[in-house]
Figure 1 (cartoon, one colour):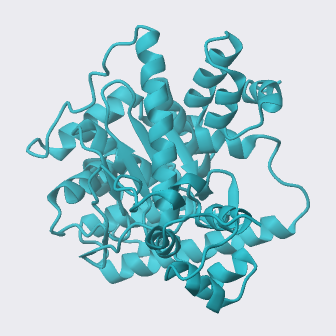
Figure 2 (cartoon, one colour):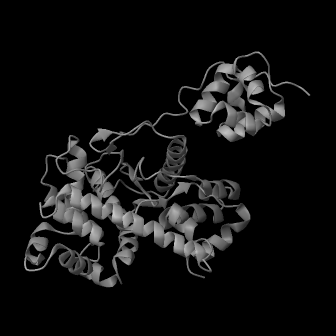
Figure 3 (tube, helix red, strand yellow):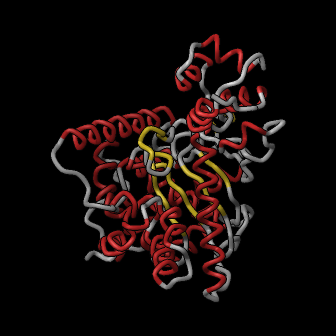
Length: 392
């Protein structure tokens, strides 16, 4: 069988990038570890079939293995890394995150071009403020733009429904909102909450917010508000809000956006008036959670910001919420049934993006194959997805 004239150094780069051990890589190619090491050291060559298996396992185009050196741009993340863990900068991005980011970037760039072709103008709220402004003014502007008020809260059954309502309001003002816990549709490639909780691509025509839905559901509404704050100051970034965003951290933009987020969801003046000192903390959290239609975790964050709870109390509350979410998810997995067809796809791509892609496809402006690629669906299923999107 013909040998593949691959470059050994590129093979090693691809393996290490994908975080495979040499033994795991050998298993993927169906050979012993010693044989694989010969390929990496340039002492032997794999067959075309073996090289194809490795490219698939390492999630790179097959042609990369023939390059003289690793491609310089493939892992480039060109938005600020604002993540911190325990007050320290997080580790390097994983391959799962890199692939997710480039997928989101493709979608955002396509939507931007689509909006321009539709004659859309720039969105006035993107970059309207800076961190030198009063965070309360920024929060007030977000609430007014999205219609976050007592009427919106009253329209939500509970805090979980309130998240859905907030996403709808954001999409109404042309902000793409996407949520996922995996890379694309691949359930074998989970996104790590420890790595990041959200990201935002700030753009005056096609802003995009992504929420890592592997995080506690009760924390996701805060992540959404945090990323919206980034848009209002015109700043892209990958962040770890809620639990790792200490109120006195060393990243001023993240501290500012956390202040804005809490003020958007639970205005300080109202919160102080509503907090009842005659009740214990848990009673206040339960009561105010129902009043503001946010989770008790968000109320706890507000209490932490105002020194009613200390950081360790708040952190313990977050960990408890995350454990509850995981237990709940496991119960749902073991139970009969599941979400209606295409529900996950609607959440992963967002209604705004999905409608735009389907509109372009069915009007003949976008090939069905390309539409399916953007939405993560087979072209033959686009019509059914469209019907599900409008509730037919």
